[in-house]
Image (tube, rainbow, N blue to C red):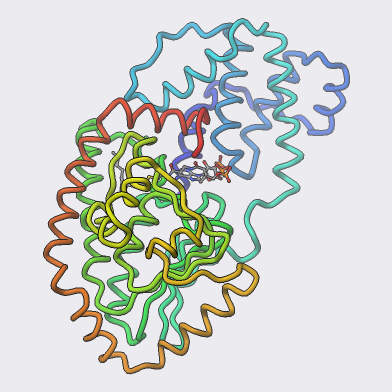
Amino acid sequence: MAHLAWRLAQRWCPSSLQVISFPVVQLHLNRTAMRASQKDFENAMNQVKLLKKDPGNEVKLKLYSLYKQATEGPCNMPKPGVFDLINKAKWDAWNALGSLPKETARQNYVDLVSSLSSSLESSSQVEPGTDRKSTGYETLMVTSEDGITKIMLNRPTKKNALNVEMYHEIMHALKAASKDDSAITVLTGNGDYYSSGNDLTNFTDIPPGGVEEKAKNGAILLREFVGCFIDFPKPLIAVVNGPAVGISVTLLGLFDAVYASDRATFHTPFSHLGQSPEGCSSYTFPKIMSPAKATEMLVFGKKLTAGEACAQGLVTEVFPDSTFQKEVWTRLKAFAKLPPNAMRISKEIIRNREKEKLHAVNAEECSVLQGRWLSDECMNAVVNFLSRKSKL
Ligand SMILES: CCCCCCCCCCC/C=C/C(=O)SCCNC(=O)CCNC(=O)[C@H](O)C(C)(C)COP(=O)(O)OP(=O)(O)OC[C@H]1O[C@@H](n2cnc3c(N)ncnc32)[C@H](O)[C@@H]1OP(=O)(O)O
């Protein structure tokens, strides 16, 4: 399935362009004259359609705004409403160009396309093999060996952000792992991040029922998703290979052990995003680290290093990044040789008396969050990220 951002970008591309074939090299020659002709401009528009790789939202907004400025001049559209996320991001980008002359916008557009044509054709953003589908999953790599089922988040170019498909696939993989013959289950990330949390583009695909329906469905999905972690019957281990954000952090309170690279950080910027805690963290974090420390993380968005998270009890042990994988997997393979039924029963006795409480907490958190998703605070934060005005 094509990624949403790319689909959005295609919507942003001007639709009435003529297709004129024009070699890239000629664009480079024309750039030296520093005055793009109408023909250069049309060829650049055509070149955009031929790009093989998604250039990213920021670039796509830039292309859109320069195109509009070059063809229509300064922004002349009424400002879209705050819930109209896509049009608002486009409006912001165009409006930001102010009174830039049409000719300059045209030149900038041609230059930008020219630079994209050369950089995106020659460099691959994806590490070799990282897009490999191991078991029919689009967003995960799931393997089972040595008594360990490993569920690896596999959107490294998006810092393993959780899109809706990934939420569903993780639930599916957990259900399968709970029934397979492995002794333990591991969640980890591919690439430099463990996970950047909820994919903020999840907020953009508004159904006919509007944002209220979207928020309601989001809350149902989240409740079911977190429920799978609460009910998971075997030892569940997080191998936190790099920075973790949002829901990928809060869920750690439901894991049985958390091993982290010293490169990992733990960040829950819910207030910054106009949101509120989930993953049962409003209950597990105060118990794990004290109410005040939990408040620093969940309310004030304090980012912890791996060492700090270990000192607070959220992380079980920290390893130097250089030996992280080797040390952790040696240890996990030894754990996986222990009698599986004994491990399962011991987990049950540690966790079961809390289960009902955790499900109740989960339901309450999802209901509160459903309301937050409809707030201006949340909408503005999402728009700011999508239009690249802010990052964590
Ligand atoms: C009503 C709707 C309901 C929907 C369904 C909801 C389901 C349950 C929701 C559960 C609630 C969860 C809450 C959270 O998890 S809150 C945390 C959300 N995460 C963030 O705010 C992180 C945002 N990302 C960043 O700030 C930075 O990307 C980051 C610091 C993580 C990395 O910065 P860096 O400069 O190193 O890298 P880039 O920004 O260039 O990132 C590379 C590409 O990856 C894309 N990316 C990264 N993270 C996300 C993300 N969380 N959402 C969407 N996209 C993400 C980034 O855009 C880059 O993409 P491009 O190359 O295309 O530009």
